[in-house]
Image (cartoon, rainbow, N blue to C red; front, side, top):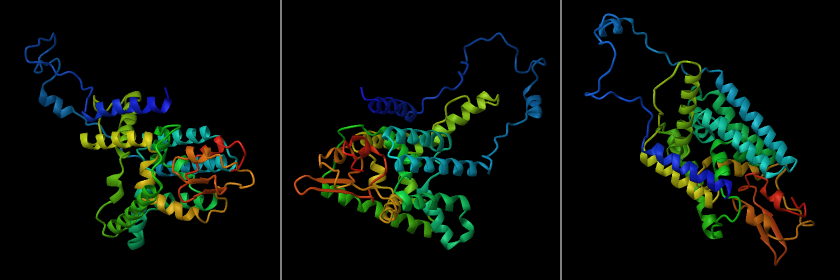
Length: 343
C-alpha cells in the first residue's frame, strides 16, 4: 500500500479520536470504593486548610523571546537548502525530506509559528501603524518573496508548514486533475482571499484567512502534546490528559481537507492561500525560473501528469511545452520523471 495512503488513514483515525476529545485523565474514585489510606483530616497528611496555606502553584513560563530568532534561523536554513536542491535538480525525495522537517519543527513543535498568511495581516497593519509590526513578522513576510525572485516558490515545499502537510499527504501518482477551465476559475479565489485579508487587517478586525486555514488544528494540538511530553520528561508534568485544540467541527474540516488533498494535491495552496498569489507574481520575474528545454523535450507528457499544481502544459500535436512559474511550487517531481533532461 502507498505510504501516503497509510499516512492519511492513520492520521484520519487519530484525528477522529481527537475530535471526540478522548482523554487520558487520571481515574476518579467512585463513592462506593474503599481505600486503605489516611483520612484527609488525618494529622499525618494535614488538612485542607494546611494544604491551601502551603500550596505553591506551578508556573508555566511563556516561550522565550529568543525562540523567534531560532525559528527564523530554521526557516532561513530550510530555504537555503531548498534552493540548493532545486538548483542542483535533486530528487523530489530530497524535497520531501525538507517538507517533513518543516512540518515537524515549524508545524508540530512550534505550532505553525512561521505563518506567511498571518504575516500578510501583520505587515498590512504595520503599514498603517508601524509600531504594530515586529521585525520578525516583516522578515517572515519578505524572505520567501526574495527567494521567489531568485528561483521561484521554494518556500511552498521547503519552508511552509502548511505546504509541507499537503506535500506529505498527497498521492504519489494518478492524482485527480481538474478540468482546465475549472482550475483557472478557482485561481480567482486566492486573489479574493488576499483582498479580504488586507481589508480586514486594515480594519483591524481579524486575521481573515487564518480563520479558514484548516491545519492550525494539527499544529496547535501537536505543539501542546510536544510541550506536555517535554514537561513530563524534565519532571514538571502538566495536565494529566492529552489537551485537544478546537472542537469537533474544526477537526472534521481538517479531515476533509486532508482526504481531499490526497486526491487533489495542495487544495489550500492552490485555491485559498493569499500568500501564494504574491509568491506567484514575484516568481514571474524570477532570475532562474523553471523552464522546459524544447531541444531536449520529447513531449511525452509525463511531467504534466506528475505535476501537483497543474503548472505544466504539454501539447504533443503542436510540439509545445510550458511551465507556469506562478503555479510551480518547486517540488522537483518533474525532474524525476523526465528522461531527456529537459528541465
